[in-house]
Image (cartoon, rainbow, N blue to C red):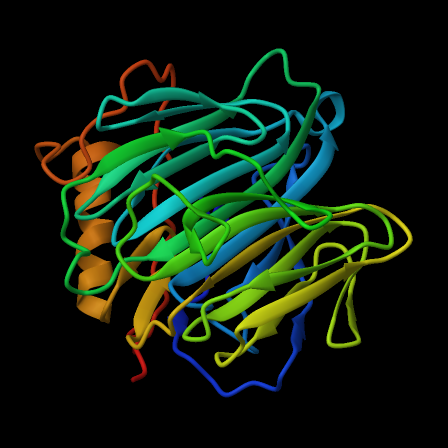
Length: 324
């Protein structure tokens, strides 16, 4: 999914100290025109920029496609990151400039690695009546961010842990399972389902910081209640994470990883390390794809898309400055 904000802010991402449990509130971001779907964004924000390498979390739905028009995201670029598409309801068609063409459904993972540069489109299918899911980004470490772009589709196997059902779709959860998809730093991404009133003690890597995004129901960690669409952050040092469901069944996404240890500049759909890189990415996109004045050397082409690609917004009138 693209960040479709007309005037995206400069997002300088670094780690900050946090309390034992930090609950991050979502902000609503409309994607596109008056009938477009609205997402709830919990990362990045001023209170916290990253959880491990996870640097972007959009949560949407359940949306009635007849009212919102569903998801129609034209070809747009990415650099220096991986996009994670995970659905609870509906079906989305993905196309990208590696030649990948893949449907994704609930319980399946689409993982796209942008590396040096990629473009892709995402559209909900005509049979989709309700659309509900999450789009997340992973920042690539400096040593790997120039990898050639590629795409993967996997179908994680559900695992029973006590009363919970867990689907590990990124990285590994100790004693539970490991995902097949390729990542570039120590990570975990998993869907957690719990019956009403139930609890689960999840083994977690103490080197990791974690986030729990609640989709349905109310979760409790350390006597702190987390409402739907909110993201609870826990710092490193835990060997287990006890999650309890409220009076309704709980569905949540657990994300985590070793603290990233690098500063990144994220603007629009690009991740770089300084202002000049972002300017270069934008210039290449405009020249290669929007204006057609340069060969498609960086971002390639999306075959089968009937319309035009998204032009990049105008850069802010100040230099984008990373922090270390």
